[in-house]
Figure: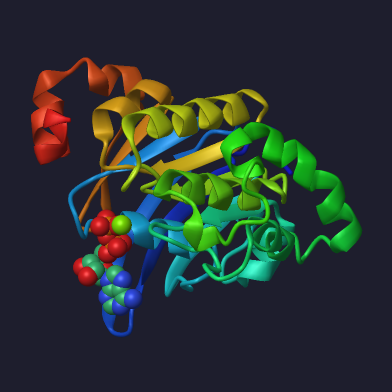
Length: 243
Ligand SMILES: Nc1ncnc2c1ncn2[C@@H]1O[C@H](COP(=O)(O)OP(=O)(O)O)[C@@H](O)[C@H]1O
Ligand SMILES: [Mg+2]
């Protein structure tokens, strides 16, 4: 690890699906211990960036670096070992299993003993989830399910947390809780890369903002600056600016 290297770096990354390239020579960097917000219109390639970082897509060209180490083309399990965790968009629990079983599966790479040792601290963050430990995951509210997903990722004590549109289907209060938690994690040194359509409230908890358009970086600046600039807001936030 190089102290001066960014936590996350893309260098001229080309990636996509089949013959169809979505990221076009994309270069970006995210600072360690900061929340970087990834914004841009639908289809800009935001989720593709997260999938590429987690090894679900292999770059056709370019390099991906974590803490200065080249991890281009690494498989998800190797990236987990690098301390990267991913909370994808939508519902990603095993719905017919209990809360507890979902947590146990989240720690499968840690082994049972370590997983069990870490579960209480994770549940501490989510009291509503803790109360429903033996309920089926599908019986939880949308907000509780998302909290459980985040908790499952935190079992790994990730250095880098990738989180894709966490606010979808959540009440404003739960969203505020989730954002507060991300802020706290960043304060403890976790690097957070978040995609979020709820742009205004997300900018308020973020340190930096990166905007993509057609798989290219069109803007990278402090979140506060973007929040304060109505012109930029119209350009990049689209309908989300009304939120
Ligand atoms: N699994 C897939 N197979 C083929 N094309 C995909 C797949 N996932 C996404 N795409 C396409 O890639 C483009 C970028 O998608 P995505 O990264 O999900 O955008 P965003 O998250 O910014 O809305 C879109 O045109 C989308 O249709
Ligand atoms: Mg997306």
